[in-house]
Image (cartoon, rainbow, N blue to C red; front, side, top):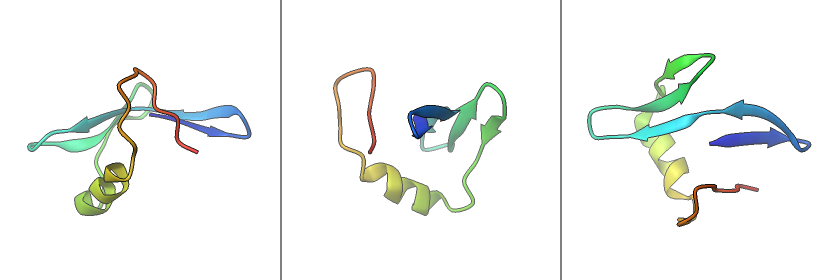
Length: 58
């Protein structure tokens, strides 16, 4: 996942969606778990599915 603000990359992370663990993995901050798993899943479920290696969210 890449987060941009004014065309500047401000956050980069991998997303792990697993029945045993849910969170974001970042090289700088390490493993981050959500405070509310259901809320994060609700947000991620709104993403459009792409068969490309890059997903652009606007």
